[in-house]
Length: 253
Image (cartoon, rainbow, N blue to C red; front, top):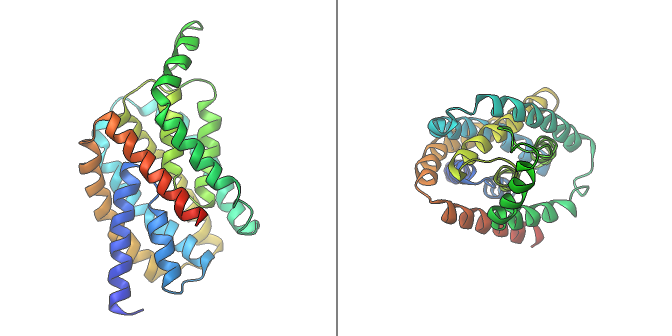
């Protein structure tokens, strides 16, 4: 690896860490970068997952204020993310790379639509839940399995996992967008971390690549926390939608 390539991979890590903290989809920057430098696809995927874990930790730390009072919610939904992440990581190792080609773009498109229509749908969900005593702190009944499903996707590939999580939380859990972002960061961290542990145990990691991405993503996590916290709810939804559409364009190109 040349010095120029090392710098570019680190900068890709900064960009990925920033985007992951605000929305998610940083993999769409780092993964193509690694492929362009000749890293084999599976090695690039697993090394990228390992490298982005420190950046996810950085993002969680940056949003720590918004996590206040969410302990029980995060613990409950975190179990779903952990289980989903393990399944997704194992699927990556067992299934051919083409297995999710059709469903991944569909999931991202669904996530974008749900984020944009979130307030309207959330009001409808809240009205129905009110008749049954209101929305629990951890969300309506389908939030847990939906978070688990997002974890499966995140453990398998991960691009735009944050878009899906923000859609799920925004519709099924009664709270602010910024607090949802903080919860999303924790759930995505759990998925990435458990997937990384599986990959470290059974896959070949390019530790130089993973280290460079880790270095950049830690910086990016702090940048993302500063930027994301300043975005009002409507603008944050717009950013999520733009990132989701960009993810679709990249995946379908």
